[in-house]
Length: 147
Image 1 (tube, rainbow, N blue to C red):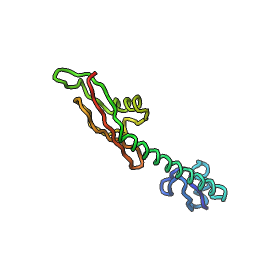
Image 2 (cartoon, rainbow, N blue to C red):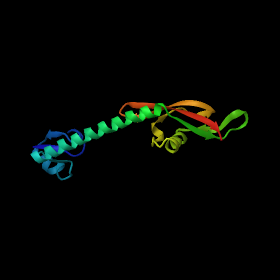
Image 3 (cartoon, helix red, strand yellow):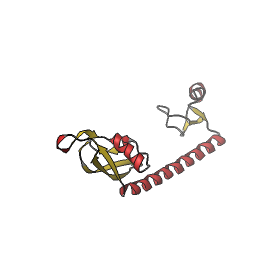
Image 4 (cartoon, one colour):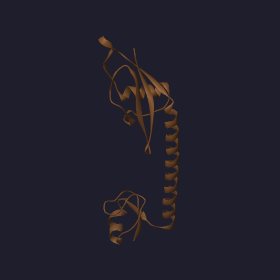
């Protein structure tokens, strides 16, 4: 019996795949647990439309990431920090603080997990990489100043 998998099934295939399984396995396991649906013409067309929509969405997100990387290249963010004796920072400037500054100053919502840099422990200007997805990365300048 041919079925279309609704979820990943170990040993059978991934979600959206059309697979041939035994009738008993399909009737007694896959169909009752809603892991698959019978491969009717209607269901096959639905899967094809969903796949097309997913590809279009990925293309749009990739284009958005490219545009954001171009905008970030020319941007800089200012982060203020408290300093101690000798001009050293109390603690360090982390990706969380940089992410917050990007959102406040530039209006882009980039999660801290997507920012790549070592903790900043001195004043100055630093280059921070941003992983934007789909193997696209951008970089922006972060200027650390005294509060």
